[in-house]
Image (cartoon, rainbow, N blue to C red; front, side, top):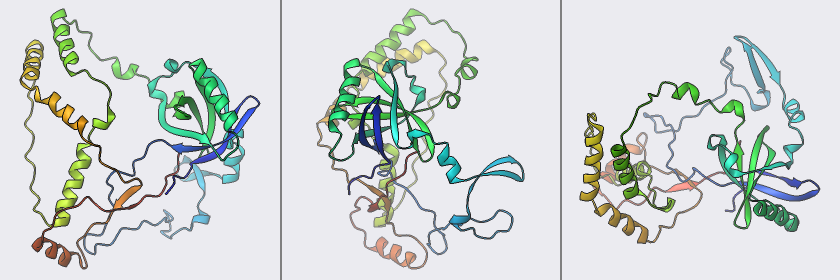
Length: 324
């Protein structure tokens, strides 16, 4: 199933305009997710929107946005009023300026998107904008409205397309001063720094995200597969504490000694690298699991007496999430 665009409109650089679509560049739908269920019946929990005072359920058409002024007073704001202040960027990404990428503090980055031509027309204009940004080695700054909220977006070339990254406003970024003020100013010896540098050099390598493993996700899938097949679940032993570091120099020396005694780590990395990556099914989300409750206990008992090889959790197709 083809991904659905979060936003469609126009990309404009002065008088050069082209129709574009915005797609999320990342996804959390592959992660294991859970539903809340009633332990007694095995049924899924359903949430209702109710009036806080009367307790009566409220229909969607009667629900509006309100800004809280004090305990019992709200200022009602309608959708039309919000649309009126959404500015022209509701349907157009206007490029306002070009800045060096190094000037953008990482704390301002929110999430990446792919910006592609929408339809068969406008590819020439899209290419002109893309190659202009590429040739100047800068990032284009524009504005876009997602879910009634205007965002700043930074556009940069990515292969044959454009990647847009939403940016935070200054009021959303906390100053580091209040956090770093109490950090002590300590003096380190050259020997300490040399030992630490040696450890860093031993652990240095190229950035290869395909080698990263989400250990918690792996443990979740393993747990679910075991419960599914009726295999016994054993509690994991508590990890041993590392203890307090008494002497920093001794800790650095011990770290280097441990590195020398564990050359297998590099071999393991090379082995993982050589493996053919597993094919991942896109758009998976909710798992279909046997649950306790009506009919659940009998199924669980049957599974326990006839164990079978556990497969990966079966998941239902995910629905596209809205951005914003």
